[in-house]
Image 1 (cartoon, rainbow, N blue to C red):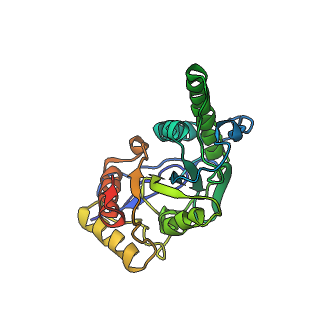
Image 2: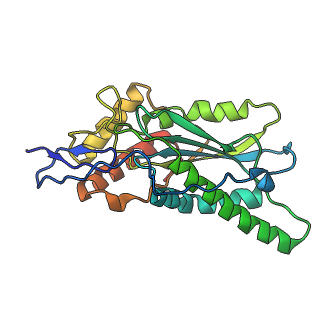
Length: 267
């Protein structure tokens, strides 16, 4: 069987599949045509004081293979329902973005889980308007944050997923913070090209259920990824349209295997 290199912009992916060679130009790390907006005043949409009651935690993990404005808008749109719930019901929000192996992990002041988001007003009309304004503002901020994330040509979701237990515990350990339910949102196509030492590396792999099982089994055996107890896991990458059909299949198989091992509440 011949090997097909099906590259995606910035990074990803070589699958061992017969077919015609597809080449996609490598894009620059930053979208220079994008003009980033000013930073949001996040405090306008945060609770005035920390509640003594248990407050949900929303942990957002972005495994980015490009940082274009379009990608930022896609991420923001996917997060909108979760942000809306946070503004209406209250939630700590922590966002971690990785642009690949050499780009490092990026954090953002508006999404550091230091103060929960919550919009409550005495006037219901004002409350509805402020929640709607907050939703727009936070989505804009996320779009900007994606564009500010450095991108490298290799990487995977491994470090983000592997760090989830510690990330959750770090928020729980903050004095005065009482965490209730935890939801982990994962934006990633799961198609890593971080090298042989990275358990999620799928370069030159065939798109099959058996390959997905072997890759994920290797991750848990090597303890590069561990089960996440008492947390909901949601995979929210909607960029499947940028993948070839074989890539889409492997991504889907990997999600299924990760969900089977990560959490009893995963989709």
